[in-house]
Length: 369
Image: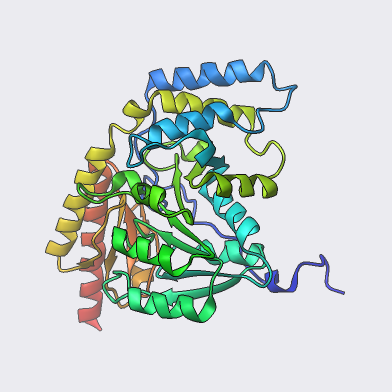
């Protein structure tokens, strides 16, 4: 017998993870390049210190204060009338998605998304023994509603998972698509993953607006991106109270530590300051898209804090060329495409210089051969 006795479908599988390399410019995991202010750090430290005095006790299992704070925040970020019983939180959006599939997926049930899509979704399905089916998008990465309707009719999924803005393309979903998907799946759950929702362009609505109309709609957010709290690991969702109650069945006891709750509550007190750089990052994203297109590259329209660009015959060689020049981006998405996170103005200038140098060298090498 092979040891350890791992589940057969997990044998030979590499753990998920983007490269973590010590380079001067890290633009590969869509982090916010601007850390919290000294005032915010001090408030978080004080909150954690207060929580530390009671670490001999279990934390608030229902994280009531945090749910109230998140509801209030979402009511000013695309939602309206949300209450604490419509909010659920966990250790990052990853755990949120896993809990959703634990509750609504599982053996004999199917989860669907439409490629290109977030690369972790099939892993959540695998880990919960949920059948995974991936449809497709149009070539310009817009949503193919006719294809989606046919796929849903064929597979009758329990859960549809869709990022909006999409990762890795940055494409946002229009309300009519989301509403139609909810109508097509009256006995299932439609999850709209708004991890990058705060970065959407002016006039692009949040799926939170649709919650009063569709009880099978779930909208997820995270504090890792716009809130610049990737290290805190706090993801959350808004949905009908019945959906939140269902997730309480599958969550592990006391899954949100007192330290996590204290950190997130303190961050919400400083939401305006933490989100102050979002407009600047949006502008930097738009100028990056414009620059890339001016260089002759294809670039997907983006409502996120990254952009997908290409097309390259050997994208790995381009990725390696940037890395050799101290700039780390992400080799992800369809063949020929690369994704760059939006950093500070100085970091984006370093990216542009490194890309220009890399492609110049590659062209010269091609001419010599």
